Length: 413
Image (cartoon, rainbow, N blue to C red; front, side, top):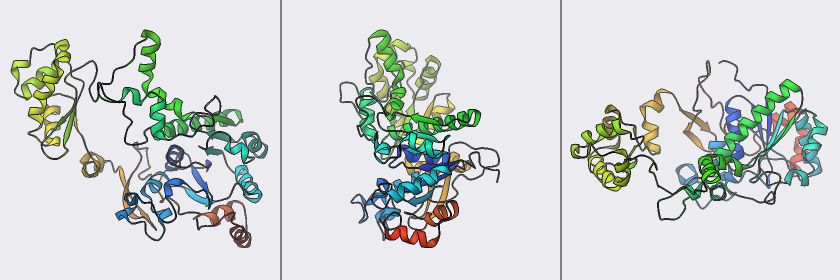
């Protein structure tokens, strides 16, 4: 296998939940030695509680098993390709060892609320005293300045505060947040990019960086056109559901069967001529673009009268064959069975000692000579204490045993 692009880069990963772990997962997938730092008292919350989570669906076969904190699907998805250690940073010994790790690393990344590293006596200035060119990526909910700097938030609350929810929903109905914490992976992608930019800057100048990333601001960018429309025209966007506000027909249409749908978009005059003929409504072929917007409810009914007789994939193929932009709405089983996904080898199989063997999404890009991106499963709690503390810092087994007795490190939450 070709050397991975980020081999030789070492990242100390203090992040938890989704936004930070997603950023470091992308980097670990590309070869960065990513050391996930947890403690026995404050480990990544996506692991779930020691006794198992009441939401059993997060575990394989809905079974917490004997080691629930290592079986969570949420945790395992976000933390593959990483080394895992435990270290209590609230102890003097834990901080001392962490600073020794900083001296051997390129990057420290965290998504605590603002001020946590300072309270741990691990502020950027302190870390620079250990390694002058260290890069620190800090990604609290609202950044490290401003009146909300100490606030704590999750992805769905970010969707509300960023304005994302305000433009999402149906006409004359409530704003809608997505069912998934969409703001987290958005922040994660931005953090990964900023981190790589800081590494490039350090390699050119010899200087480190403090990257102050606001998760809120990363999501505001996704409704930039609405912000500009208001600043330029004092106009607020209307919620349109799944419809394009400038073209019709446009949206998601019911297909034959239970919860089967096809999406149709980008309808111009040429596309409408093709669609009206395909659905057997030649009487509507001369309806202009402006009229189609005014009569979109009527046209949607006509389109769905046709799509509802077909399977979603058959409808997609017929529409695409007619030159119309369309796609079947796939669920998880549909993605797993999709020939395109299979041909590219996107889903990769991982065997985990506690979670078992399952298919996981790989990376959505391919690079020459790299045929697999998932090299190892997510670490069990403290799995690599011996490897990191012993091989990297030269600590003896006796030292590690003493630290475990003191609760500074260990493997049992």
